[in-house]
Image (cartoon, rainbow, N blue to C red; front, side, top):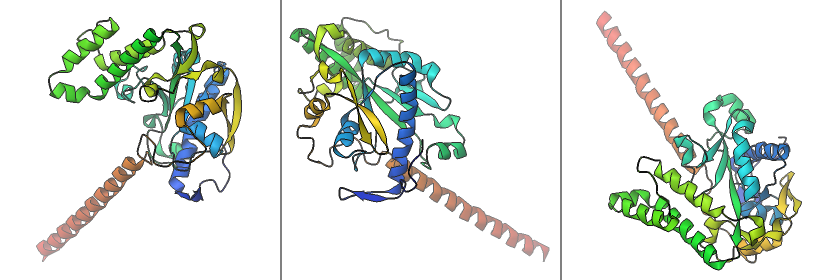
Length: 329
């Protein structure tokens, strides 16, 4: 992907200073998005900018200056087809993360059901990695993809779905705490009873709970609903039931130097998600900014460690040389 020559310079947007490294992180994420877009195009699947990415496209024609990631969503049927084809379609150096992968290292992308496509740093050498991702040196570059599910017209069924997802997320989020308090098994039995299923004691129970929640969210089809939602975010925001007609057509909005697909009813979507969305509000992100801060701090500590080791090593060599000279006298 080509970027304007001055794209990687630090700049100020909306009175917010964007460091040069954040510009490189944005470019790296757009590279991952281009891989997803290629797969979707080959299989006639539709994705949409969502959450902060959609808001940035509408309000800023690019990233929100104080945002650091890309979020997209897909209607459930396209989402499941993407999961099916990705293992064969992803180019070398990229991988799936989340509950849909069999690799334990990658399953723990989050405790909420969603898919993440990311660069697998184990499959790149440092030079090609830095070149492909525009000099961004840190790991875990990826894009989160969220399913939009159909909300049944039957209110009782909708409430049961919500209760199951709510209980499952609380269980996964508090797993270690519940273990320490010796009540994990009781909480798992409550979840099993609520869902009407049993989870084998020797199974990967966290992953099984993810999968049960995901299956519950995906229960209903388009013809059984008038609205769609992301169940995880709906738990805290009742207004996140969006007419399914908002996603019937696609429009393309400017985003940095490219154009991103957005739902035709993006005004309805953003109003449900943010209210008066054209008024900028900072500090509402659900994660630390920037996302690479802890990796940056780890790198600084490693550099300091290597420097210290070099100093000690150099001092040791000097001392040995001095002793050797003394021995020769």
